[in-house]
Amino acid sequence: MTRIILHGCNGHMGKVISGLVSEDAGMQIVAGVDIADQGKNDFPVYTKLSDCQAEADVVVDFSSARAVDAVLSYCEERKLPLVECTTGLSEEQLAHLQKTSEKVAVLKSANMSLGINVLMKLLKEAARVLAPAGFDVEVVEKHHHLKVDAPSGTALALADSVNEAMDNSYHYVYDRSQRREQRDAKEIGISAVRGGNIVGEHEVIFAGTDEVVTFTHTAFSKAVFGKGAVEAARFLAGKGPGLYDMSNVIEG
Image (cartoon, rainbow, N blue to C red; front, side, top):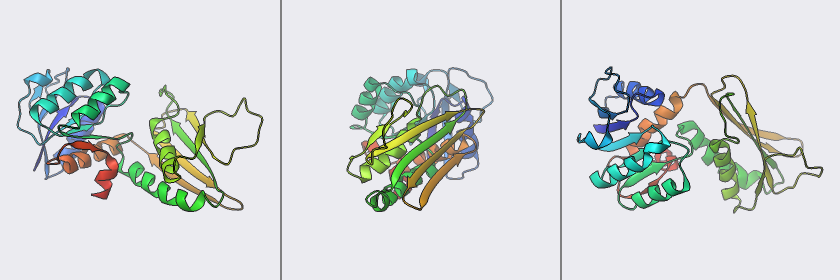
């Protein structure tokens, strides 16, 4: 049984994870932490992380960037592995996360979806074959109209997967509106679309002469990130210090 402390338990993703864990016989949420105690949980909820002393195997954090430093310090002090799902961390917080991983296991990924992380692995294999054969690479991402950053962190992670497979020999182009020149063979174009309530769609295009190979991932709800977080918690429990990501989860 993997025992979880869920930080941010009453947020949207916290509720998703609670639902997934309730249907998993091998997982249990032993305590939750949230500034809003709504009193509708099947486990004790603390409004302050420092008040939670529940015995657990791993902490899952789906809260806000403002709380991450406290979560990292808490996990280091209690020697608890951490699945860090919160986005928008500063450079200082990322450095804190790296330092904490020297003492306890910490898992952080640009995207918690199992499908996206399998896709990143497949892209590396495709790039090693198609890029040397002259295929151009383009990434197109689509999200809802409320998303303020562009391109998405996932789009950049997908581009990075291709670039890493090619010894980081590519550069990224985000906007061609002011360019009047032929496409560079060593560029990866990254385009963003914003509209409606699109949860998330990412497309990686390998365009060659007379043939095109396209990889597409579509998220129909944010539940895919919760499922990935649960699998990450299962993987990370009992692991020694180090910085892990979802590639370690899918590789077992």
